[in-house]
Structure formats: structure tokens, C-alpha cells
Amino acid sequence: MRYEAMTWKDFLAQRKTVLESWPTGREVDLEEAVRYQRGIAESKNFARAMSRAKAEKKTLTQPRAGVALIDDHIRLLRFLEIEGTADLLPTTIDAYTRQNRYQEAAVGIEKSIAAGHSLLNGFPAVNHGLSGCRRVTEAVTKPIQVRHGTPDARLLAEISLAGGFTSYEGGGISYNIPYTKKVELGDSIRAWRYVDRLVGYYEENGISINREPFGPLTGTLVPPFISHTVAVLEGLLALQEGVKSLTLGYGQGGNVLQDLAALATLRELAVEYFGRAGFEDYDLTIVFHQWMGGFPEDEAQAFAVISLGSFVAAAAGVEKIIVKTPHEAMGIPTKEANAAGLKATRQILSMLTDQRIFADNDILQREKDLIKREVRCLMDAVENASGGDPIQGIVRAFAGGLLDVPFAPSIFNRGRVLPVRDNEGFIRLFAKGNLPLTEEIMSFHRERLAERAKAEKRAVSFQMVTDDIYAISKSRLIGRPK
Ligand code: 5AD
Image (cartoon, rainbow, N blue to C red; front, side):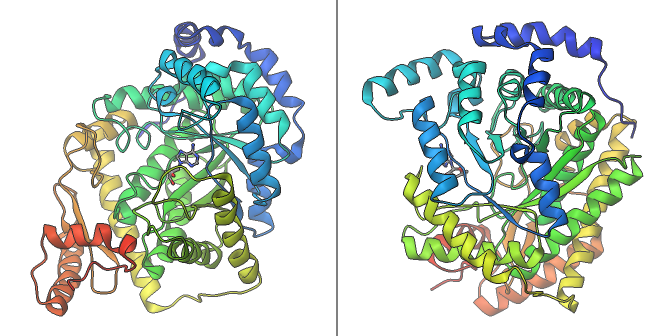
């Protein structure tokens, strides 16, 4: 596949419409934004923090957080950095802004003012505009990132990067397929091309902005090879536009060895595919997400899930962990619950910093080999479908089910893949849909599932899949019959 950045002419052709799509867009002046970013202390640059974590072999903690009003949002973030000892800060964007529904976000802001508390599920950064974003980013001492779920995040990127954020989450696949029903995949990928080009422009002007595709996808029994393929593809699309600081992610699956194999291979596969595409000048780091599926309601049990994830992050030596809270089953956490998740995570990470936990063993090696072989099958299929154009390759692969994300709402995803745990809790495939996996690989999956079927004295079925989806919230990993 050929990787070429979009031309500056094409970028500018879109830019006017993007900035005119809401009044605050007019505040953005790219030259002024670059000057503003130059003035941000190095200690607050997200890309620097990630590369330093890699050099120092540290795992940085980051929560999710966002409320409707600027002052409340600042208080929340200050609490998380001081009381929660977060290394990195987020700004989680509300659902209206994610869907470019700024008028409704404006109503949400008004209603939040009237109510005296947040009635939005995140921070409406576009409505608050450049000055609102700058108030937030100037009020904190840690690097701060925009976290969202937006298929067309062009205006949000323009405003928030000019507003002093130094990292931007998302991607054209990972913020479409798991998040929307009807947005054309090609449209979201092209919108994200603009975002990556904007970041590339900052890089060309000496401002390093970290980019993080969203690794966990639907967070529901996603086999590592599926999320890895998407991560590598989104990484390639970002590098193509001049992104330099790239963080690829993976969500905790629950089987410790599978998670360790996944985190090791994510780094190895990315380096391999980026090199093959001719990219050498980038700084790759890895983020691990604590369990993204259903959580136990009980707070003590939730802390246990958080702690197991923290253990895996430390054992794998990833640069960043995204932290859950004891309120996860209930919804948006209080600031205290959010800080509690951070502190539990930090305790585990600190106790494990000087330990080398897993020397390679046979099972880890088997799983790493398997993930690599699986990813190669999918990447080859994208290449073959591409006619040289990576975006075409991705769009066609999804249309044909050669790439297929389990439990995704998008109509541009075939949704024929069914994952299920094997008898040791490894996530395997019950139905492969149209995924281009070899017979050898599939026969391994079948063998492993036959073992579980035998142990549970029942056939592998959709019931088993459902049981697995709810197992962790009911204090188990594998959804065994009672
Ligand atoms: N503040 C804190 N956490 C949030 N999440 C979503 N929005 C917010 C917010 N405004 C969390 C959910 C879930 C994850 C996907 O993001 O609780 O853990």
C-alpha cells in the first residue's frame, strides 16, 4: 500500500467549512496556535511524558473525566491530579459534541448552570471554545488529552489543540465502528485524515502532539488480533499524515497470559508494519485499558478488577494505563471514586515497579505466535483489497467482513464474528464470519473450545457467549453454568 499525506491544498479546502460549522471555530488561527503551544511548559507536553515513561520504564496513570462547566471541570481535574495522583489528565467530551450537535450542547450548558451541576456527560470543548479550553489546560500541572468517540472530530481537534491540549484520542475506524450506526466508514477515515494532518502540521512546526487511536473498540470480548489489526492500520494512517508521537492501545481481556501476549505483540507488530511501510521516525508507546466490559456493582469487587488490570500493565511494562473506578457499573463516577481507582492502581504499579514478573514461557510464546499469525491474515487481506490505497483497503475489508469487530453497532461492520472464552478464559472464536483466518488457526480455536464444551457438558453456543459477556460483573472470568 502507498502512504501519502493529504495535500495542504486539500486540507485548506476543508478547513473553511470545518471552522465555520460553529461560531467558536472562527477563534482558531493556526499560526497563533503554534505560538501558544510553544509557550506550554515541557513538563505539560503529553508526547514528552509518554517518551519519558518509555525511557524510564514507568507506567503512567490516567483517569477519564469531564463535566459541563469550565470551573467545575477545572476543580475535578485538580482533584484528580492532587488527590488521585494522576500522571496524565483527560478531558472526556460529552455525547452531543461527539455527534457535532453543538446547539444541544449549548442547551446542556445552560441547563447545567441553572441546575448547579453537570447535566452533560462530558466537557463540551467546542462550545467553550479556544478561551475555555485554554483556561482548563492552563489550570492544571499535568499533560492533558482530549478523549471522546467522535467520527468527525475535525472542529474539536482544531479548537482543542489551539486550546493547549497536547494529546488527542481516536481514529477513523475506532471512533466509528464501535460508536456509530450509520456514518460511512470512508467518511470518518477521511475526517480523521484531516485530524492527523493537523497534528502533522504542528509537528512540522516543532510542536509534538501525541495521538492515540482507541484500542479496545467495543470492549466486549474482542480477540487481540482484531483490535491489533485496527490499531496497526490506524497507526499507519496517522504516520502517513506526519504524526510522530503515537500510542497504540489494547483493552484488558481478562486472561493474564493472553493479555501479556497481546501487549507484547502489539508493539512488535506495529514496529514491523510501520517499518515495512517505510516509517522510521516515530515514537511508539503502548496504553493498556483496564477492563472495558461490564463491572461488578460491588465496589470491593470493582477494585479487584481494577487491580488485576494494574498488575497486567505493570507486568507487561506498558507506558500508560487508563483507569476505571469503583463506580463503573453505576455510570459517571464521583471525583472521589475516580481518585480511588487511581490510587488503587498506583499502589499496584508501585509495588511491582522493580519486579520482573514473566519470563517468556511456552504458553505466552504460543499466544504471541498465534496473535501474529492472525494479524498477518487480516493485514494481507486489507492489502489485497486495497489496490494500493490503504483507505480503500480498509473500507472494502470491512464491507466484505475481512475485518469485523464483535458487537459493534455500525452497519458498515458485518458483525458476524462471535468470540467466546476457552476453558482457561482465553478469548477465542466461535464463529469467524468472513475473517480470512487459515484452517490451521481455526482448528486451534475449535480444539480449545471443544475442551470447554466438554468440561461444561454443553455445546458451544450463543448462550455461552452471553454468559461470558456477563461473567466478570458476576465475579467470574468464564461464564460457566451454575
Ligand atoms: N467522566 C468520567 N468517566 C467517564 N466515562 C465516560 N464519560 C465520563 C465522564 N464524563 C467513562 C465510563 C466508562 C468509560 C468508557 O468512560 O464510565 O468507564
